Image (cartoon, rainbow, N blue to C red; front, side, top):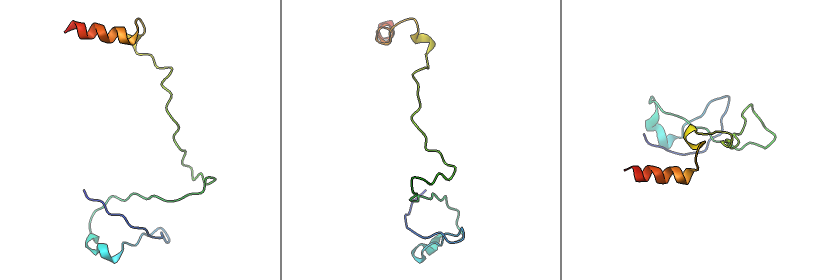
Length: 77
């Protein structure tokens, strides 16, 4: 898959492909839209915040310290 980039104004929900990319007519393409939005514009899209893994506990790590566990695994070989 190849990528091209150009800027256009979306009018009535239509994006006009520039003439220099006429070879794309009647072809399948995947489109990604990037746009500038004022900070007060929510648009129903919530910006993802960092994921908090602090409450996750791996069963193998609850009984011993991580470095100790790694060393024991290395010695196993």
